[in-house]
Image (tube, rainbow, N blue to C red; front, side):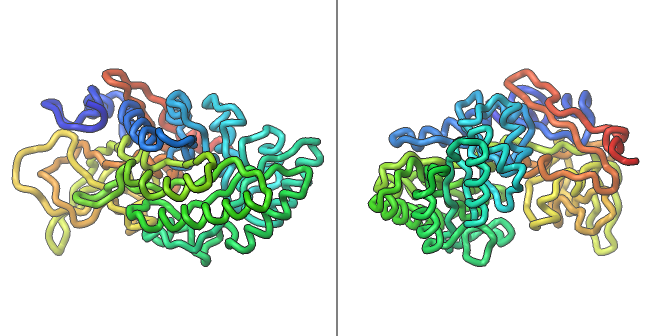
Length: 414
């Protein structure tokens, strides 16, 4: 069975017991299921099987090289949001032509590298960025492949910190400005306009924002093609949400395809998608050890773990909800607890007001659905070393990112 399930030995990842991993690799430790990633990629790819498409894995979701390398083996392209992520993609074996370069505020050095490499597309965000790309392409005596990110003014209906498609955000160009910019770019000999790009946000769980964004982008694409612009693709970004909470309604891969394919078909352009969370989120857990228990004056307990906001920032940053469960549950009536970390911040809470079976110091807990925006957002605050990461494939597992040491953390200090 791919992914996480309970056996006689407690919670397992595929055919590997998490208690065995924690015993050998220590805690905190991220554990990922390669087989579940494979299943989720295949499910999404199949939903679009009847239409020309490319899935470019959003490296920002989980940039661990072994995970990115696994995506390449599955047939994905890469979506990079920084020069560092371009290098991760190259190290994982992607060719430059497999990489789409996205992101607000690309530096001149990052643009120079992308143009020199010849990435599949640079998703341009502004006229100034287009001017810089053009000058760099001219200096390299090449044509830069550029798409334009549009802002469709569509609310993703997710958390405001991860909603990127409304006019108040920093992302993309309005439809009118994008139209003017593309028509101008098409006349520049050092630029090759290859597509339009739109991404309304992350953790999208409703059809309507996806449909509206697709229809808006497709309408502009049809207009530009009629005007003589030779577009190759329509990039509708990513953002498909996952079910973090019990009973949470989310879109299936088929729902996702049904929401956007009608608009894309009207353009006859290749569809590009940039999935991240939907592929790797449910395929990871954070395993942490209980290091202390404290009674709360108002009732219940603080369960203090060796993982905190430096390992998993989402609960402190967004108030995000992650299921938490014992790796090896004990019998007894459930406790009302706050699961908190060791960091010197009150916001260092992995889960508040939860019910857990009785736990003792030394027990292991698993924080679920942390394959995306978990380890990749970690920090060294309080001078805490980065956690180890493990990739499981069936009955085999390996440390794919070893635990950081204090000496490694301090190696740049004078």
